Length: 166
Image (cartoon, rainbow, N blue to C red; front, side):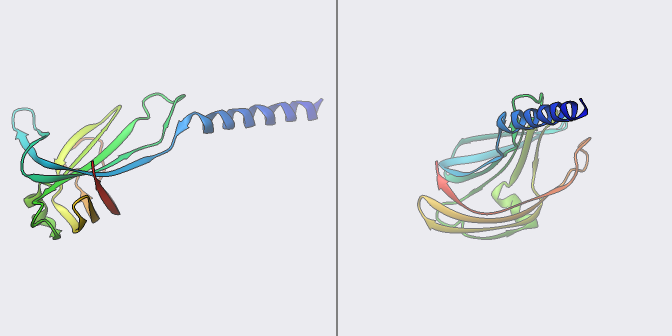
């Protein structure tokens, strides 16, 4: 009888773990850019938050996007983070450090069930190298500040990837 009980518990655990593994999407990453766009980032002093929008313009706007793993059987586990920046298509190559990140409107955005935040990136490094008109290599190590944002912790976003024209 004891063996049957232990075996039953074992089967239930295996079934539970198996179901959890098959009901989850994997974490995903996208590295893209658009032509003829610009980033508009403004501070709403009344509401104390940044407003962010991508509009028509004369720059290339790059987007790093990470979506966390999401499971069908877990409520409110959605989470995404984004890094955006813009460069002149003819002069954008180079290294941008700390204060220089503001010259390319480097912006961090995160969203999820319990958080939504947009803020400029003021510390870190971006190395930008043009491969051709449809591909750019971007190396980043960006320190994301959480000061003044309740419940959030500082973090570093790092990547070394090829961004493709969308």
